[in-house]
Image 1 (cartoon, rainbow, N blue to C red):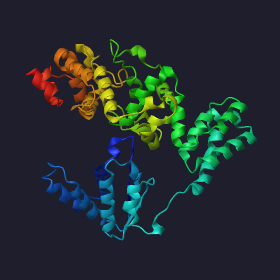
Image 2 (tube, rainbow, N blue to C red; image 1 turned 180 degrees about the horizontal axis):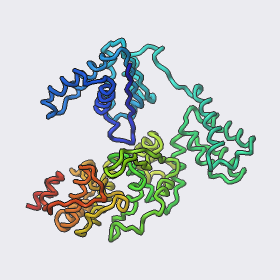
Image 3 (cartoon, rainbow, N blue to C red; image 1 turned 90 degrees about the vertical axis):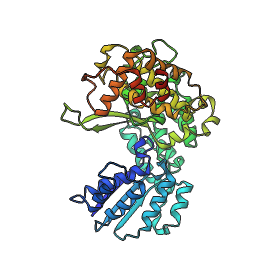
Image 4 (cartoon, rainbow, N blue to C red; image 1 turned 180 degrees about the vertical axis):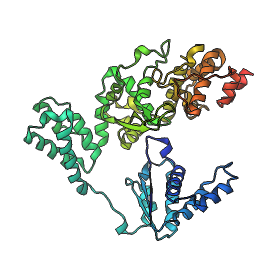
Length: 452
């Protein structure tokens, strides 16, 4: 027997493509075979000994052969609705279903999206489909609310007030409509109520929908922090990979209108305060990563992400434009967001303009690695063909490659460190790259032509 799973995740670009799902399933199953499966050897040989990448069709065919290696095979695909190339994914699910392999058991989960329902309806009978209706979830929400009332620090003032707890429980369960996310947000807000009149006033004016909830949270952000919030949300929606809290906190230290653009004085003494600006819209969790070269233990890192897929949907939807008050200022549009991220990355790299800047510390400059690896990614996605004003970005690029040899060299070193997965704390001996070499190596051909 073997089992494999894949969780599509809106906050991680590596978990949003159906090809990555297929590769992950192949990896998991091959590790449970007890040896190298013949189907994988065949795949390897067909790709000229690994010199070429296999096509998706070949990967799916290899998966079909690999599944048949096991007497019982269980595959779980979670959150289909968070896949970027959803139609390709649905086509693959239909193809796998069509294999008619009796030993293969497939479980998929998703929110009720029309295209997903349409694709799966004709594959399954009524007994094979389970809808989590609100009535089925209400009791689970009740348990969740009770747990929060007993364990949440912000709600501890009501632990010895049984009647008040019943009021909170009744109000939230009756109005949640089966939405855990809605109940969670209301509990976060109720935690700010310091006395009973404030609490009852909040219970009487609970927002009806998630959109109303998110609009209320956004409008509650202090005016002094609104620009920070916009930057934070842009990065969390469109970052190329999940972010550590220190990286996100560093992004708000860049002010494109100031000189210098980066200033350590703008740093938050406690990086976690950056997440607090956006309240229930974001969440933090500690994850363990493989140890670096000189360390033996796994490294715990605090990651920050949007609290739920529905937050991303709301921020990037047209609905936010019709929200009350200043809600529309937090509307996140893809091309301007990528442009803003690219500008912050480039501005951050330009601070390393001294020859000794190669002695970098990832703790002292936590955004350096991300900026070096992904500013071009965000630049390309910001629409270089037109539609947005890229003057500031192009000026910074010219400053990097044309006028600041040390900054360009240090940027190249950062790229090398990242590619080799070496410690940023270590200095490496490199030849002095020319600006032309760095620009061409980075794929900036237009800039390279200017340097010739």
